[in-house]
Length: 301
Ligand SMILES: NC(=O)c1ccc[n+]([C@@H]2O[C@H](COP(=O)([O-])OP(=O)(O)OC[C@H]3O[C@@H](n4cnc5c(N)ncnc54)[C@H](OP(=O)(O)O)[C@@H]3O)[C@@H](O)[C@H]2O)c1
Image 1: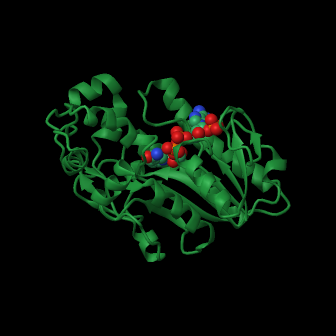
Image 2: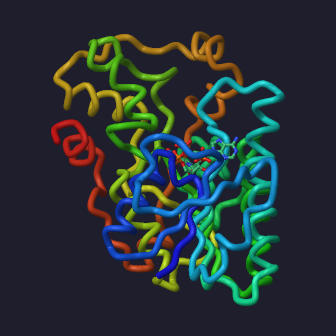
């Protein structure tokens, strides 16, 4: 299949592009600037989602588009960062769909990034794809981002909106950022530790995107999370246990708010107990349903 991928240089994108190429797909990536370390066999075109329209030649003949590009969420937010988060995702998706609408033939499927931030912070409530939109900046962004992706429905594309949880990988993402403190025995629960964390192993994240290319049961909102969410305290004990280190230093919320501002509340303190109902109904086979084996695979391999 000829597939265009944005955000291909990111944490998920790099792994995805590697797997797609290994499976024999014809991949074309859209990146903001050329850089060292790009996979040499993968053709690329330049596109900055915040600045301009993607080049039509890169999209011509695409059977699928996987759109993951966006300003990172996990950073201290100020007005400029918030603007960048919004324009890169919402404006970028609108530009991409608009460029696709100029083509003679449209791709069959448009797979768009989104996040479980859509649901806001919801305590112990079990959240599925039909749960209502939550509150806060991230929920607002996700709603606008998903509405932009839905513009693709007018082109008769199957639109898949991946409400992604915390992706666990070794090289990057939340786990990689937590590891130095936990390895040093200085890890601990975040705030009360009661908040639910919905995670997915990077392997399953990539497999789910690949499954969504051809499995037509993947349509609309899809929670990209494992079926075994855990409370932060359980996550903390599991991670420390795998590393055989103590985890006795809680990270107090006031300190995290001081360091990371509003982002700390929206991401670190938020409680999201999300279930992958659509993926399970679509017959998706998770390799990692429980946190322990997922962490063991990542930390011991
Ligand atoms: N990782 C997670 O745990 C997680 C959780 C929930 C949702 N998601 C969503 O899933 C998608 C992929 O996640 P990821 O972790 O792979 O993201 P990532 O590592 O931050 O990579 C995102 C890519 O987007 C592009 N990008 C960054 N800033 C940009 C900007 N200001 N304007 C336009 N493009 C920009 C970059 O590609 P170029 O520099 O090559 O253009 C980058 O490689 C993202 O949209 C993310 O929000 C991820």
